[in-house]
View 1 (cartoon, helix red, strand yellow):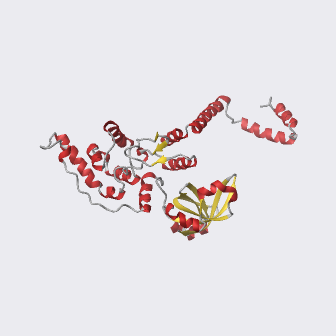
View 2: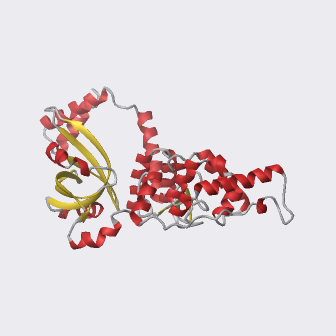
View 3: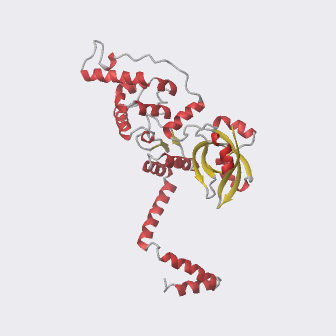
Length: 350
């Protein structure tokens, strides 16, 4: 570094930088030299950065699927990746028992959600399901699924999460009907496999055919918002739709903004705006003066965003900051390094 200082000062003067400024900048560089990375370390990271940037630019679908597989059990990271996928204009398909794999996969330019990424669904359980599907063909209906998979080994909780996520929509779109019928379907599956294991069969066919399908009680499906709420419990974020979708005409009429659309026109934002969001998380903190404040996370049809809430607004509206609540936010907007920062001034339920 000492040997380079005369060259740096001379070069600075040559480029119309005064000596005082040049020395000041050099002093900063000299401090960094005490802990700066060596060339081999910097070069290795530069190559890795270049390779991943090239992959994302040229193979964005495969790249995002691979990134999600790296963090397949971390819902918070998957939520961020889902927003990135949306921003890139890519398509993330809902989990499907006949198309999805245990891990995130790519087919015809689309990313299929991983069955193993669902909450309380183990990779091992769905690997067995997918292997049977690949070897003997797609499942035809829920009873065909029960005859080919011993659902007792899968477990009730994973089945609930698969139904909530929409993974069985290809077999029956009525999620509530399937959810309410789990006990009967599992019992039917168990009876089929028990008889098959006994080696017995009736006069008219195989043991599997001799067990009559149970008569299931038909119920009306969950309404749109309930279906999304159940889906959220399984996936950790809204995938097939968003609770705000049904309010869009009202929001347009009342000129209530969507945060994801604000990002595209950040230079034209008013300093005080009304926006809508669904509460997805909250972290409370205490200031040095003892006042409570919070960072509240929200979602909308285009992604996620965060709002800072100071003590007065927080205490006055604490009951509204429950997960899943749809609320209208009056926010003060600031642009910092081209990033939109939101400070909550007022709030009301939609």
